[in-house]
Amino acid sequence: MIKLAELEKKIEIKFKNEELLKEALTHRSFINEEPKWSVPHNERLEYLGDAVLELAVSEELFAKYPSFPEGQLTVLRASLVNYQLLAKVASEIGLDKYILMSKGEAKDTGKAREVILANAIEALIGAIHRDQGFASARKFIETFIFKHLAAIIKNKSYKDSKSELQEVVQERMKVTPGYKVIEESGPAHQKVFKVGVYFSDQFIAEGVGTSKQEAEVEAAKNALKKYK
Image (cartoon, rainbow, N blue to C red; front, top):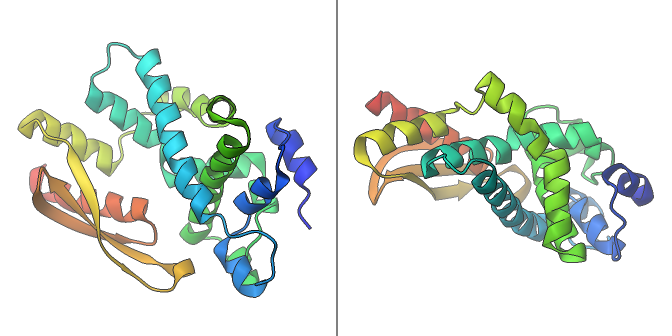
């Protein structure tokens, strides 16, 4: 059903255990339509890949910019791991052709689709890490994700609401904003998240979105209204 060899050629990685690759490409909605599918959905691999991606990008930025303070490194990292950039990377690889999802999800062309693509990239990174270790996962991240950094710096596209809030708050209050999920609602494949932004333990504002990242951005926008 999935042309795994074709995808492996694109990303220049040959999996030892192809079931991991198949799992990375399986969206929860597909399992609902095909309950006898041989592998689980990709959310556990997505969880792992998210952590691997953050570590790899953090290490790369730490080494590449020795004079940058923590706040600036955090802003750049956020620009490389947000769902829009990851969805763009997924499109560049053509990953959407290989993701297994329900017929309804496959027709979606909005933000929900971007989130599915971004999550699949994280799941793919998790699968690479499980199959071949951190070095291979980091090489994939450097090849397909880190290459976007130069354009991000040139266009100053790292200046999103979360980044701007962090700069403002670190300068004025010497703390880093933190985000916490306050509430989750809706079915598993159409969740809505309410996220709060905190300075130390003080609640400042909240935001709502169809992903945690989107809700965090909305919370940051609302917080900025109070502090700009």
